[in-house]
Amino acid sequence: MAAAAEMTVKQASADRLLLALSGSWKLGEALPSTADIQKRLEASGGIEAIAFDTQKLAGWDSGLLTFLQRLRRLCEENRIRIESGGLPEGARQLMALAAAVPEKKDARRPDKDRHFLAMVGDETADFFASTGRLLAFIGEATLAFGRLLRGRAAFRRTDLLLIIESCGGQALPIVSLISFLVGLILAFVGAIQLLLFGAQIYVADLVGIAMVRLMAAVMTGVVMAGRTGGAFAAQLGTMQVNQEIDALKTLGLSPMEFLVLPRMLALALMMPLLCLYANVMGILGGLVVGVGILDIGMVQYYQRTIAAVRLWDLGIGLFSGAVFGVIIALSGCMRGMECGRSASAVGDAATSAVVTAIVGMTLSTAVITVICNLLGI
Image (tube, rainbow, N blue to C red; front, side):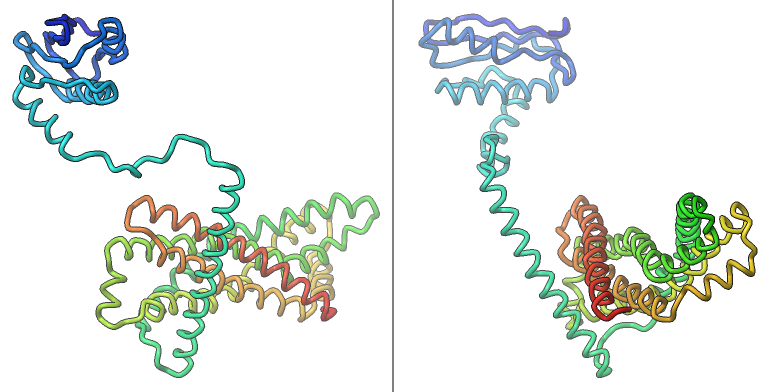
C-alpha cells in the first residue's frame, strides 16, 4: 500500500469490525486486498457488521470506490452488513447508486467451458441460419434486378455513376500492380522448369492462358473484395448505425433498390473490364521476363500468345469476372445491411464481407471449372 494511504482493521465489538481509513486514497496507488479482510473475518468469527472511521481521511477518488465495491461483494457472500455511516457523504451516495442498479445476470459470459458437441451444434445452427439469410438476400436482389429491367427500380443514376468511378477507374493502379506482378511471377516460375527442356518459348503460352482464363479474374476479384467489398459493407454498416436505412424505409424507398442495386450493377459492369485490363498487364509482366531474361524476341512472344489464347479462354475469364463482381457486391451489401448498431459491428461487417466474397469466388471458380470441363472448353 502507498504511504499516502493507510487502513487499520480494529474489532470494535464481538460482532463488529472497524476499518479506519486515513491519508489520501488515489486510483493507481496500491489498494488493500479484500483477501486480508476475509482472513480477519474468518479468524474472528461471528462478525455481523463492518463499520468505517474516516475522520483522518484527507482525500479520495474512484480508487476508494473500487475497494468499497469489492468489500461489498465480499460482505454479500458472507452475509455481513456494511454500516456506511462513517464514509464521506459523496462515497455514500455513489455506493447507494451502485447498489440500486444490480448487475444484469446475463451481462457476462459464463466462465465454465462449453461442451464440444454444444459448440458444434451452435455453429451448425448459425451456418444454416446464415445460409437462409443469404438465399433470402439473393432473392430480394433478383427481384430488384427484375424491377430494373421493367424500369421500375428507384435509385439515383448519379449514385450509379459515382460507384462506377469508385470501383472502376480508381481501382486501376492497384489492379495494374497486382496483375503485372502475377504475370511476371508466373513467367519466372514457369521458365525455371521449361529451361530444363529448352522450351522457354512456351512461357508465353503459360502466362497467356493462365492470365486470360483464370488468374486475371481471380486476382482482380481478390483485390476488389478487399478494396470495394469491404468499403460497401462499411458504408452500409455506418448507415445502419446512423439509422439512415430505417429512414429510407420510412420514406417508402426500398434499401435493396436504392443502395444495393446500383452497387451490384456497377461491379457487374466494371469487373469484366478490369479483368480485360488485368489480362494485358499480366501478359506484359510475362513479356518482361521472356524478353529480358529468356532472350525471346518480342514479336515471337506476341505470336505465341496469340496462337495459344483462344476466344473461349477470354470469354471464360470475362464471365468469371462478371460473376465475381456480383458476388463481391452482394457479400459487401448483405454484411452491411446485417450490421449491428455499434462501431465495432461496422468493422466486423467489413471483415466478414471480405471473407464471404473470397469464399464465394472460390466456390464459383470450382463450379465454372467443372462446367467448362464437362463442356470441353
